[in-house]
Image (cartoon, rainbow, N blue to C red; front, side, top):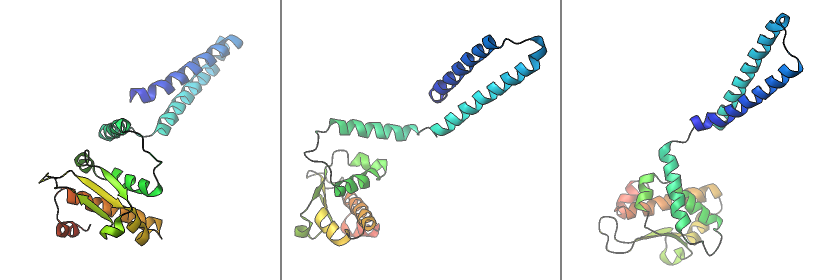
Length: 190
């Protein structure tokens, strides 16, 4: 909190000091005009306080430490990855957003699980697929595939609908990763 107030208040105080010194040099006060001087000093103090308050209000609320840590940790993990061979497509961005919107506990579970986008959904007759042995029986390498071709074929006519279905598919496959069978995942509404 001190960091948020420090800079703007220091700048306002320095500005007021310089302006006050210049004013005193250009128009030295006399005992007859002391009431006018006090009014000007009080007005300057009020202006400085108001500007500091407005500056702090414009800065906004401080981000909670847990959220800040989550963003920093994710950034560190992403920085360690090699750069992608291509720029992410709009569909890739939908999958990335769906993953980012998962609760932090799910993201921790997915830390070592690759999530990829494929155009082989028509072969598997699916929107997504979990490949692995679940968290309970980890006998296969875990992998989640989201199929762009079937999702865009069935939901691409409406961007909002496509976004919602991508989010649902990602959550569906994450639930499989956590150990839910198909009936259990559907029971969750996924």
